[in-house]
Length: 314
Image 1 (cartoon, rainbow, N blue to C red):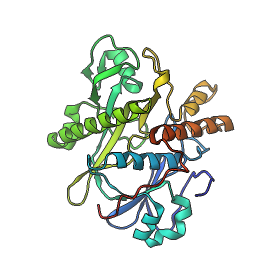
Image 2: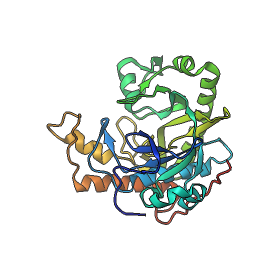
Image 3: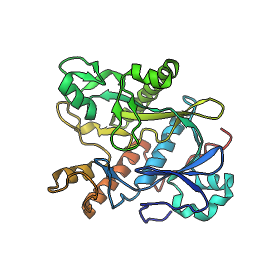
Image 4: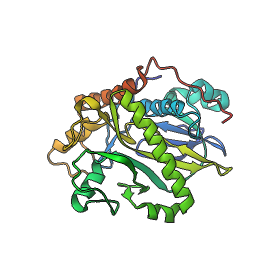
């Protein structure tokens, strides 16, 4: 794989369906998509001009690693992540392989559920902000006396609307039921809590706190409900190193925190485009954070990890 960070992809032989903050999604055929995770990094909903090396590789391979752990527990959309397997299934992807290998997932096409399935095991971020103002989460009351970063027991299913731009908006479970139908909403809540509990326990064995995470689900052409998109990555989750955890304050995170911290301390930027130029040391620190959580979870470096084979017959 090229060591050059990837800011944009251009797979001319495939139709680009969507270019998000991080992922470029291409149509391979009527049933399958290629999801390519770039090294783009955003903060305060602004995409930075400089990519974070190996970020996209980490996001893709952590997702693949988690799905190997979840095999048999939940149906998912991932068909292949090994580039040899992807090319064997779709030979026309061979010429562009250098631009997507180890950062692309060949996935089954689905109709996504229009709700983000957030599970919070600790109170932080937007949940802590709302709680501090009103004692609630998405309008529903929480116990009095919670401190920032306190553990929530049991974890809370906290759905959100899917925003095309800006932040997602927390909604109540009743509102999720209105959007999805009550039966589907209940099923998504059950699956989300089950997967989070599994992930929390696995992470804890590696001295990582999985504070919260966001799942997405979709229905395939046959109506089967599948776990889709990224799974328990540093972009969709808050990973806290256990050794630094202390409730009553914000926690250091194994993600793009060096980027956020530098921008927060910067004077004169109004958190709107165009973004400031990130210095080398901030980019390098963020890249190391992403690679560190991969090492801590999998017990392997990116280069040493053997890519799993899921089989295209799922």
